[in-house]
Image (tube, rainbow, N blue to C red; front, side, top):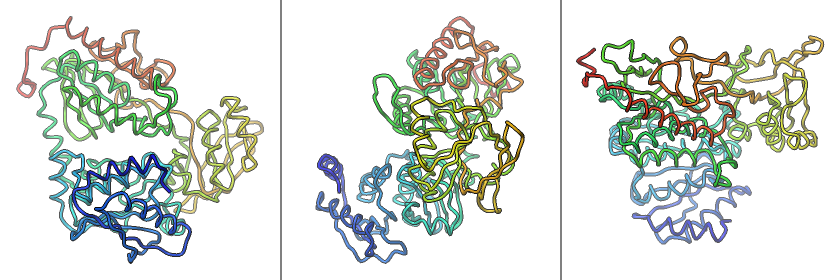
Amino acid sequence: MLDTQLKTQLQAYLTKLQLPIELVATLNDSDSSRELDGLLSEICELSDKINLRRDGGADRAPSFEIRRHDSDIAVSFAGIPLGHEFTSLVLALLQVGGHPPKVDDEVAEQIRGLSGKVQFETYFSLSCQNCPDVVQALNVISVLNPSIRHTAIDGALFQQEIERREIMAVPTIMLNGEVFAAGRMSVEEILAKLDSGAAERKAAKLSEQAPFDVLVVGGGPAGAASAIYAARKGIRTGVVAERFGGQVLDTMGIENFISVSHTEGPKLAAALEQHVKDYDVEIMNLQRAERLVPSEQTEHGYHEVHLASGATLHSRSVVIATGARWRQMSVPGEDQYRNKGVAYCPHCDGPLFKGKRVAVIGGGNSGVEAAIDLAGIVKHVTLIEFDSKLRADDVLQRKLRSLPNVDILVSARTTEVLGDGSRVTGLRYESRENGSLHAVELEGVFVQIGLLPNTDWLKGTLALSARGEIEIDDRAQTSIPGIFAAGDVTTVPYKQIVIAMGEGSKAALSAFDYLIRTPAPATQDVREAA
């Protein structure tokens, strides 16, 4: 099942096992059980520290538990964790086998301090690039705290179960049988939800930070580049981000990053974060900026960035690189049925709609690519475009029109998402040619209509364009001295990763030039000045 090269790589990883482990399989007479049995057998052959048992009594088949010998430490998989989840499998083998997880000591202690018996279940799809982060985070938590158990479940393999539980988006996390969260989450985010006092403690600690020379708001490609270029100047640099990696985390394949023929978003995001960590940069992740107060409005002479957590950060200069988010249709039913049939990531959630009817909203490259991908999974795709023609590249349009299970509607305005209270049942659209109203019966709606800049928190503070983007000059300077901006959040055209990195670097260099030409505030202790 594993090719020779993969076996060689896996065998090398398994030399890191420190303690014996057991793979306890629950199987039946299905093809998927035979496939799982073959995979587990091959893994066992690669290390004398691994033993396979086939006497598992789990509720799901095929499934297996990775258990540390003579210990309560274990993690479980229901399904065959290949694709994006193969890395999760490898890490689980190593961590259950005594190889230490890569988490900060403070985080590890917080995990060990959690009390009470807890059962997590995560529904994933093998094509989802967001799911491994959640699976791996919960596996780490369960390895460090045996009172917490975790089972990762391939939703496509257990279709009846996800329908019964009304799981319509991945990753979806269940806690003791109830929905805990949906979407990408890190260890720290999960802990913040489990430990109610963690956010307050973190906010208090952040507010005690000394002022920065450059504070970067945003952790995507532009923010990472800004932080690296600023730190290389030897000045005090901080990065505050809602989630490090930004939109890159939601990108499946990247094939236009110069010198790298192909990579995936989560892999690039991890590399960005590691590169920033190579320098003396204070990284403050999982923190959302809520308000900017320019230095001219403060008594101490520093710019202030107020966070949703209640913390306030101070800096002589600020680089805003908060990026953009998926644009919504803003029609009745969209919010109500989000993750209940309304989705924004066809790669992640597409497998959950196998054999069903779905719509894709948007006729640009993203929408047409989504429709092509989904057509290979679902029963039927209806692509709905507001304009009178599709805007995607011709090669994509030709491929789309060749598919027998796709209908294309142009000059159509979606007016409402329909549902039965628990899930999507259809949508309504208006013909822009004659004003007639129509309804389409379906189970899923994938929205692919572009991006919106993350500038809501800046309205009324600095100059924004009619589209809400931050207006900057050729040096990345905004309308406020000492405040710079870079990446998809700005008026710079062509929203591309490589362009964002260049703009982020430029913004940091401009911030440094500003700092050496501008006297530092006389006050060093901003708390005294306040």
